[in-house]
Image 1: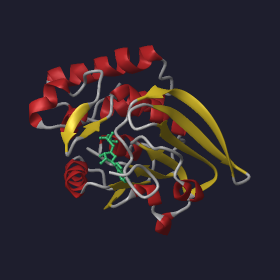
Image 2: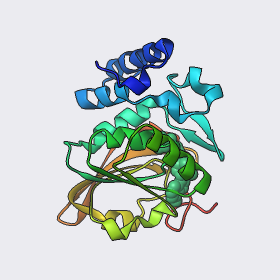
Image 3: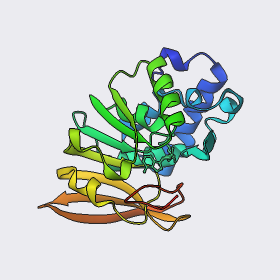
Image 4: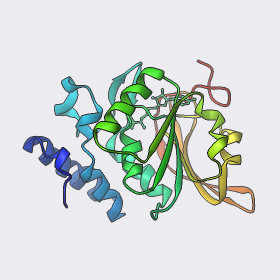
Length: 223
Ligand code: SAM
């Protein structure tokens, strides 16, 4: 796999990233070659605090400040694979966090919209994404449970925080035949659901159990 020059500053980190792709993703049944290649290209260590860089390719979530986390690499890969991206889709992400999943999505599609409720995280993600040259991402701060109606409909929507239910505005803003991936359950544990819109109706399947931070907002959890 070819790695981007900006990810190659440190041989150890490059090796750790290659091992992450091989042992955490490919060997756990992430099959989409393009997902594996994107995960091998994007320098995950740039999305965490300098003090945590040596742990950036470990097999778990890490703190990113404001009580939030950058998701486990496997979960990012699984969610991206579940979106079934072929390249031209308009994508909306809810929960920008560090911007890492945003960067993975931006590797596939011409336009990624992403909403984060924490202004501090959104600013930091914007700076990292800019430094890495991702010019195809459009970020905003706000309540992502309401979606971003101005740019709807979206071919794909991914929610990176756990919701009590599928927020109605997000389903409304999903295009016909679109795919939405979202963890749904209680505040601590959820199922990762894949929702496909057919004839205006939701067809839902469950992928795995998961534990995301809560989706806080009008159509999510109270603070
Ligand atoms: N995708 C992120 C990454 O790669 O770093 C991980 C995100 S973290 C697991 C979930 C994020 O969702 C947090 O940054 C949190 O602030 C954000 N969030 C929670 N509720 C939200 C809402 N209603 N709208 C937008 N963002 C929200």
